[in-house]
Amino acid sequence: MYKILANTLFIGKKLVFVPECHSTNSVALELSQKQDLPEGTILITNHQSRGRGQQGNAWISEAGKNLTFSIVLKPTFLAIKDQFLLNMVVSLGVRDFVQSKLSAPVGVKWPNDVLVEERKIGGILIENQIQGAGFTNSIIGIGLNINQSGFHLNSAVSLMMASDLNYELQATLEELCGHLEKWYLTLKQNGSDRVREYYLKSLFGLKESRTFRSNDREFVGVIEGVDDHGRLMIKENEKIHYFNNKEVKFNLEPLI
Ligand code: BTN
Image (cartoon, rainbow, N blue to C red; front, side):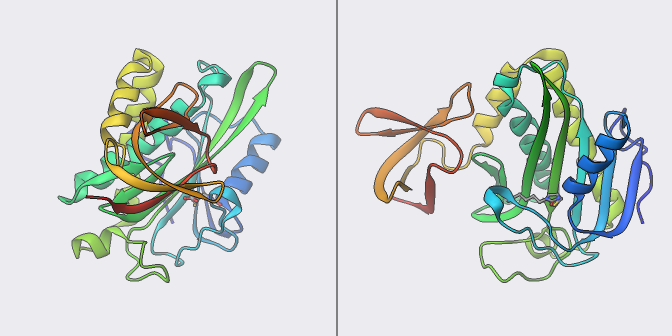
């Protein structure tokens, strides 16, 4: 059970809790098509039976242990071509929250995985509803591992595993949404420069030599940044390549 958030201006002022559902993103989308939800509405559950991740993957999370929720935003101030900025602000909000709990470095792996050192603690699935030239709703789905004590994949971690502490889920939701709202309002009120700057600062692997794989070709390159379309820029032998989501995978081991 979750309560309306007390520490924010608009995120979580309307909160819909469902004990169980297939996917909070799907339920939030259905609800937003039936009624005009206020910006910041949260749809949250204790258990997703078919949680969805990026690229058609499943998002599996132990019931009652973690945060699995969606926020309905209305970024009508944003041009569709700039939609990657939403990925940036949400990634930064989740990153800052996790970093506030840990001393180990927390980074954003392009496009929007949140990593503690090299292990994934949170994932983000943004689904935009577009009408004509603008956004109507943007469903921001967030899965953040909080109190789960182990995962099938060694590459996953929770806050509890990283800190040896247990967390109260309502309090973590409140704090996390405080960080999300701060970054969203930074974008809305001050524009994108600060957002781009901090996203780059938080980018996992920036300026490090690593191996990448694209179209069955393995190559060594250096991440130089992210362009205005949200494409990852990787330099290989003095030439910059631009990759859209799904077009490149990177090896987590740095080549030193
Ligand atoms: C990823 O890293 O692949 C993204 C994972 C996103 C998972 C969250 S959990 C809440 C929301 N509902 C879903 O079905 N997915 C997102």
